[in-house]
Length: 351
Image (cartoon, rainbow, N blue to C red; front, side, top):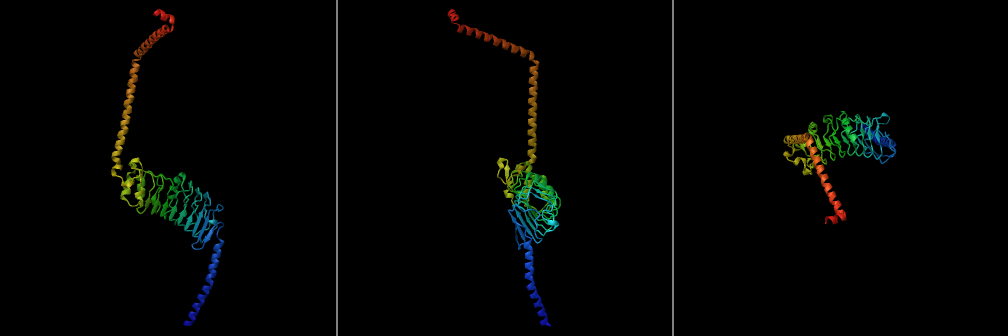
């Protein structure tokens, strides 16, 4: 009985060994047939790479087994609805890299058919229009990179696209190098961010509302270096948040740009007196009141001067006439002397 059982096991094993290579060859041949034109495909990991191919058009006919799609230099101007789901198919993509493709527009449901997508890289494009439903369907997205890709219009439209509730599992959001002047997140609680990168932008100040928004997520780290902060009274709330909180790992490189006296100084190293807005505001109000009072006094002096001129208009007129007559008499004397000096005969008589 034991010999029979051993024979059955060895028979099954031998058949498995014979059929396994055939199945692998069949799978590999099918995968090779589904590799799009102008692209290269790798089996392990399941990756499709399309580099510097202007002929590429979306949607691509990639196999369902593809886990990583790298598309760069394809000169794609817009991501239309269902741009990655050919014939309405659902792909198992986990990573999608779309950098350097000159993308200007992301329409609604552009990433439909990618329910397993975890990493999306849209950096180094020129996004001018982002639909409110651009990221709908990306329920498992963990990483989103938008570095050096937003135009001013795209930066204005992005907050609404991020606050629709479609990115509740998003952990990392990169927005470096977009010339942002404010934090482009309306409600942090719509996201589950652990890392927010806002380096190398144009943020000059972070007000109380922004600080309150950042405080809503106690586990989120915020990177803010290489921004031209204006270290004035408006930065007071951010200054105390930066000193008392450890959620800004690059706080030592958060530097002042203005005023010039504080240029290059770390914000967290400044003194509390530099942000003493309670005393600064009354001084500013007092200075404004002083200028108003000075203007009123000068206006009154001008009115009094004009009234004096008006009341003495008769005497002023006589005075001006007397001066004119005196000038005329003096000019006649000068003219008479000139005639005598210029006539030789009169000069001899005079002698």
